[in-house]
Image (cartoon, rainbow, N blue to C red; front, side, top):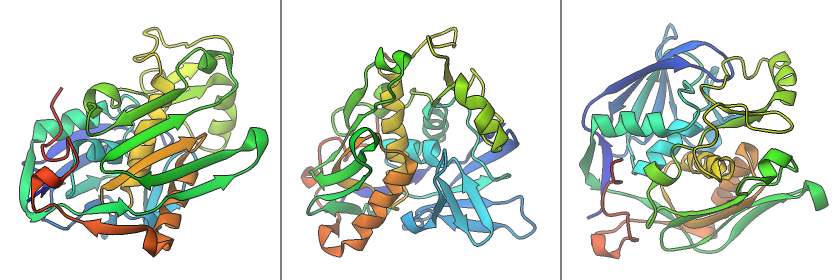
Length: 307
């Protein structure tokens, strides 16, 4: 049986929120089978649980926000991406503020935290959402066109193309394909950082966003170059970060997908719109388990490789 996974022990991190600039403490704890991933706002007078789901997403401006009543947590996508990349099913995330800490702007620190705590197999079958037919969402036309799509695939593969019409971005790799079954998430995707442009900083901060951003947790570009002294971690780091984000956004559906995701200029909003369209088309998917691990897609039977 292909089993569900949680942590062997708890692990903690402290950082600041990318958009809020607030100090935040994060505690990642093991959870029972079939719990899913649950964020818990422990700073509130009465702690509130926010289980992840496509319907729990209430805001997608610059990040993915999940809510339960008046309680919310935003910028969940990097931690969710690490959980997707390592195949974690059940986890409690205790958090002391509204925003997940940005750490270094990638998911590598979350991968390190999760792997340091250790991954435990549980006595319950891992459930996958398997695509049975294509599902697609599109917006705009011509230069404003953007789309995201899921196709049937015995595994989990993602392809993403960016298009920013910016000389620095144009000089990097703008399309990436990553297959979770044959690639290494920790090596190939996790280190890709979030990015932004100096020309957008004033507008973002006027809107109360990006207050915790800096060159220690983001790639910063002006009109001509990358300003970070260490340059890029990958030649195609910007496109790879979009893959990282997409993996986190899509994992908010609550189960791993057996599908091929492809997208052009997509973002948090389109990714959530795609999930909602998927769930609305009940004949487009089913839920499967693997009693015989040999029947599972390549790479899914073993917990993800360490660094």
